[in-house]
Length: 337
Ligand code: ATP
Image (cartoon, rainbow, N blue to C red; front, side, top):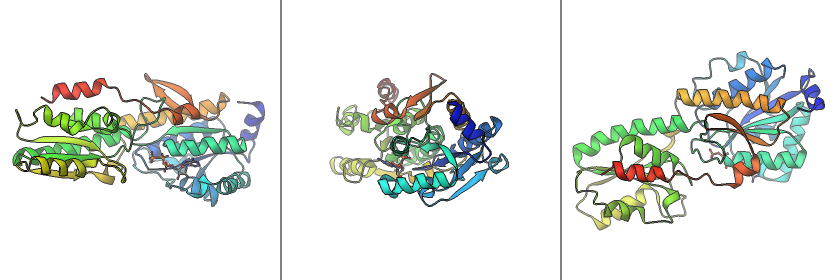
């Protein structure tokens, strides 16, 4: 950290600002706690910014003490609340955000969120020369440069719990279930939950261009050895074909003899107490964010790769698509016969 910034932050009236942005994810609270405590431990002061960038624009800011973050490590959601801010995508909105930072004596910003939130941080950091550190917080696990994002493991476990229950009814009624999970453009939740639940197939965005995944599933003779099937499908943007409904309708039309059902898991995937893995990940990343500031890092996302903390420049984390390990597709195919 430059001497000037260190002096600034150690001065009585300078603060590190922290906010959560975009979709909430379990483990965000553990990250807020880690950042706050590690900052205070190292002699800094922290202000919590409520409702993401929106609160930075409208000045919803409050100092966080160690007590403020006690007993939150086990809670889902985010005590700082989160929002999507249209205003922050405009230069005028970001100007107001910067004015709030000046007024509140916030020198540096720690942003916990997904791809969009880190894109916002990157633009803001460049425009106003504000040191920003990002923490990957999204259930989708779709940020390049980190093996895992905060909230992914909890969401995965929630999906597995739900699909196990759906399996009971699918087997009892000899049904084909299409279960829709979150993930947007990323199939991590679908692919890995399919492996973990012994599902018969996963339909994921990464594989969309390669093959008609439904045809592949049907072509493998999905009813040869089994009377029921579960197919996990990544949600699809509204304007595109895809999602559980789309595939269910296709099967109903082509194979009217089959009893087809759809289950869209929806927002329950976001909530709930964070898993042990998410709590540990969030604690490590949050603590590393303060270490990074002290090492004079700026405009980087803190990630974890091969179980080691890494600093990923925003540009890399945002621009690149995180590839799914294609061997996972093979694992599912081989084990679901
Ligand atoms: P999740 O993956 O959970 O959806 P996210 O961080 O990707 O999280 P977004 O809704 O894409 O969620 O982004 C959150 C917020 O980040 C937006 O509401 C906006 O305020 C800010 N943001 C996103 N893109 C930009 C951009 N290009 N410029 C400035 N701000 C942006």
